[in-house]
Length: 262
Image (cartoon, rainbow, N blue to C red; front, side, top):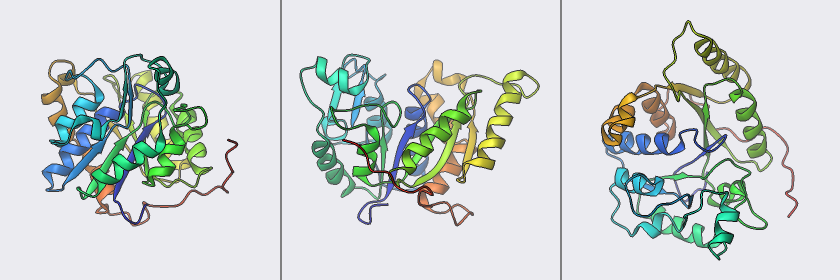
């Protein structure tokens, strides 16, 4: 972790895995504990304006920020594409130094920073850089959001391997249940297997599953409040603040670093 700043970078195995849900619920949980929390969504694509449904707007509202929204989300593009292509279509280039400068300003004002990525760790953000470069540049440990469904084991472990190649610390994994799952069903069996095998093979804390919350589809605010009080989000909050019972939650990547070819 960057010696100057505290917080986490929340990334995922894919787009639509629940990064914004985890981040906003964690913001509320940490604020309820009396912490000053700052947020960033450095890059957002498929951005439809200042409406409440955008990732940036939801993070901004949850944190109760008063800075201009551009300070926490410097790059927002209308096309729902990978950041590199979305930026190209908008006639601009994503500059990592601009994001890092904005991060440092916000980090100086808050006890903890939660930064949410876009897509997975290898999604390109510029001609030579991907999301992993941004995580490395910001210098915060990563929390990885994945699904409980079958296939998640492979996606999580591949993402961890990609982060390990840059010596990026992985604080933990949180699995999101994207639909209601009963233990006696095939989905339930796959979920239990995914949790057990990731706990066996990942080498980091695996939290979850984050419960499916039907309220979210009717009222984001009410559903989010319920999620913020869930056992999984509180366990993640303990991990982030260093109050978890386990003492070896922060660990360096175990693989040898591999230089990127840029």
